[in-house]
Image (cartoon, rainbow, N blue to C red; front, side, top):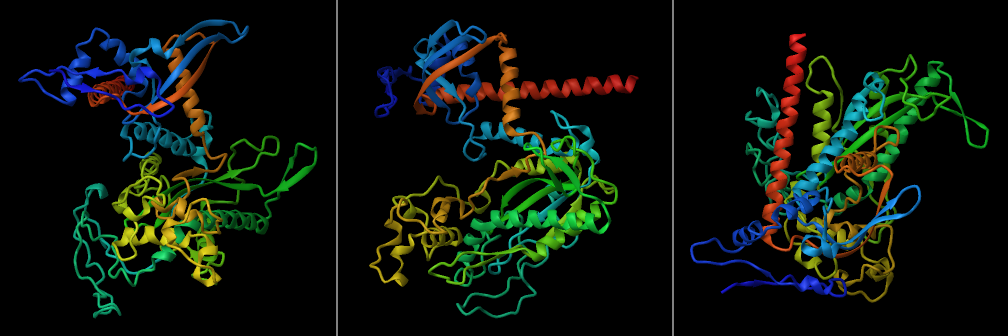
Length: 540
């Protein structure tokens, strides 16, 4: 008997052919389920064509399935050269990679995104891909801005490293919170911790007392941290401009589109920034800040800063801005005076390519690109956007650390007119619609699954480096060249979404395996080319 697997039909989206049954062969002694589906697919005469058809989305965990018409048009005359409907393709659908940047959601698409992130960060340090190589001589620092304390948490601190690699650190850590006053807090929990935590200890990042910890302040800090960074960056720019005035470096006149001359400081600070979610679920920022000059004839050009402005001035500006800048949030019914949003005491500023060799261009770019594919995985929480019907599965005011943070997001983001201080009749805040009248904190509900942080995990100044769009366009051009598509031919696709994911687990297994083999062969090829280039250089 052949078991019958039917792909469920999506309402009003799935065409009739989507209900076509997919049969898998089952015989005694043969594998069943995914393996049987893979064997059945591989045994069909069209298997090679199917693999080539799915190659663009081969490694994707949940590719997007599209249906419609693909038309080739002459770019100059507009004449239709060819037309093909997706019904003529394998599986009667066109597969497209989901493009999700989160490694936990789709490792293959995150791998591509991480490669792009590496290029975006690294090109701003060394040049290349349209960025002049001279940027490698500009003063640049690597700064880390941390969140303040919202209550004592378990942590691991190594006062003196003796290991060769921090990634494989096995050094003996210091006691967790041994220097705190012994005894208990007002809730009866220990106020100190003498344990020497391992790197994988699940207690790391957890508060010593959940009731003492200020969960509301932390989610508000995450939510307004983007505004804090914006003001800090402005303060850094002002501090560097003040140093230029003090040292007699004149302003630069730029002719605007209207013909008027606008006088601007002779130095600009360009940045590339990545947000990292700590184990305690507070965001901190890693930023590369680079000093650039201003060319009055070409304001978009990347030129060195004027003489007299050095990396020491940049470091001083960062430290001064981190100490001085803070944000007071708007009033909230739970806290009429608002919350103070400021940086923590640990603001670390380090130079790139210094004599110790600890921080190089490649290491920093790889470090930041790694965090560009992360979200809240470090906290142990991962979910899609929460709604009134799903919030009770994650939020709990009496639950663990993450559950209380999610509850704080949902509670603070409630519509203000339902608050008890307004005198109106209240209802359960978890049942309120997301579309009701918002307040200044309404976005906390939208970003409750991100524990309050709603910014992008990788941002940069406009002139820092290349953009993701430029990298994707270059990749698309390369693929068209690889497929021998004429330059004078334009592809116009009229497509409709019909579903997400592979039709069977066997298809997913085959496509992902083929994608991994292609990546491995390319990696080996790159290593062989690099080795050959090294041999040629050594022989010369």
